[in-house]
Image 1 (tube, rainbow, N blue to C red):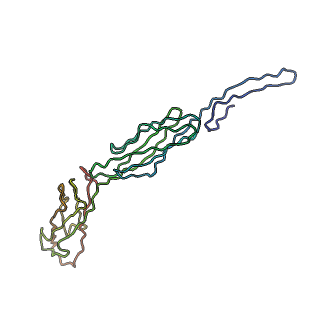
Image 2 (cartoon, helix red, strand yellow):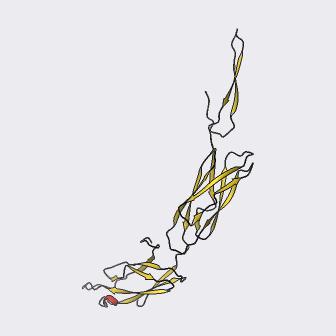
Image 3 (cartoon, helix red, strand yellow):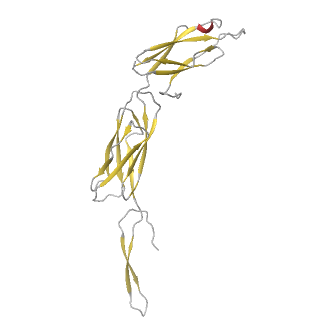
Length: 231
């Protein structure tokens, strides 16, 4: 019976011996082929990177030999996330390091999951996931001209202003929300044009016709990813 030791080793030459009383002994040799494959492992320096920055990644093998190993590296998930085509693990070395580069495209985007894959003949492939975070989301503030209005003030009860920092040549779309649309209503969205620092929008008061105590309402906004309705 040949046992699988689950260890990456060279092929083993085994000598079999047979002996019995009254018989000449006999021997035979058998080569046991190793069926366990070495494993490649990818270890990024971080599981997330901000676009425009670089990331160091370590690729290692669990079966160190005197032979160098050329590892093919592939990246997927975004054209802003790229790795070198290959990296060489030197002779007698367990690992090597390579750099992943990213590009800041100036567009507001949601975090993008990216994947790195390492392959080499005679090795099981290794992979790792990295989240590519956007660097273009501005700091946005929302202010109101008045923080107390009458419910009879109508569709122009007060004015809200959305301001961004820094000001860039990119268009920014803000989704507006009201915590109680039965008290105050706002447009669904406002757009900051290229190079504009701020934009105004109307806040409408809703008259419910009932005698009620003052109500507190929260007006807020969310930056939307470019070309989407994703916050």
